[in-house]
Length: 476
Image 1 (spheres, rainbow, N blue to C red):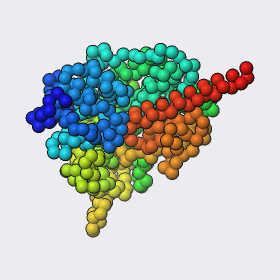
Image 2 (image 1 turned 60 degrees about the vertical axis):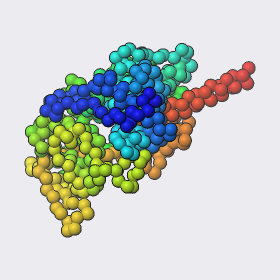
Image 3 (image 1 turned 30 degrees about the vertical axis):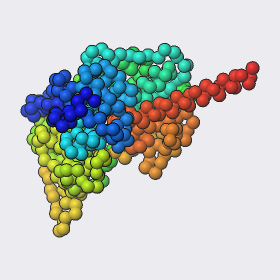
Image 4 (image 1 turned 120 degrees about the horizontal axis):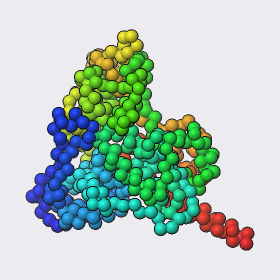
């Protein structure tokens, strides 16, 4: 702890966002990097609080060594701070951009003041590591001869692949899309995560020897039996992509789309793969309604602003949260409170306690949304004119047809893949973790679970090796 009074004398400072008019005119990330001196001062705000709730289970699912690298940044020891980050987190440049930072909600300083700017320090350390050339491939020193299949190239699959490859196994990551990255590439808008950030990490994995088999829909192009036959262990990292649907009259009208179809199409457009006019989803000049008040809904709002929507309304079924932490979620829990994202700052309006009852249209296209105000007495009917409706109501779980059925893995009551504490499924040699096992969750949770699943897979392979060795010795 380099400055024992830092938390008393230094106010919190965050990276500055570009002006709204400037950032909605581009798909680039919209934060200006903080100067080094400012970041070092922010590191000095860490309190050396004795019990660092920020890195406990309530604060950081990967249990980052937060007080340690905060102090290292304050002292200007950036490379050591990077080593501390990588000790628990494969991709701090991703979590530093995308994680909602439950660590900051659990920060002890947050009880009496604004918490330490943990997330922005984390991103700065990782980005400096790439800029200085400190983040380099770490191929294994020996090969085990074991072959592992990882199904899905999102954050969970990538973290597991890196851990298993560094242990010396031959790892193949199967991805049904043409380019790897999963949700990171196709679901997260470029203004939150420029794909060059993802590509530089993928280049590291490839240099370490991870093989990416893209354009392969396992369960369709490759049967689950063949996958198990050709590999000594299988890790399921396919996520929970099945979207929650809106079962109301008018759902089939043109102009009503799932949020992920809208977001992934725009990401492909930015990457140079525009959709044909017949299937293009474009908010330009349209009145848009986004149903769902979470992060995916916010991403839709920000994307609509950049596409040039004439107006944007975001609807949420639940009541408006309080402006400050609610008593039901005391520190250090993740607080129930109103959150205003960059997208909300950019324009549009939000409405609460709204339940959609019908979508109406003309000539086969949506023209209005009808709804009622939940909890109102008397019932308050609503009608919102619209030309485009985006459904961002969350996800219900993994795809159950195809691979999961072919493998025969057991499912739990939520129709997610059931596992034991070691992430093993009901099928020997097949493991699962992340969203496919726990349902849609945070990026940081997926990284932690996949690191744990990689350890479980490693134990399985060692047991197989011991069994083969014993069998060979018996035969001799």
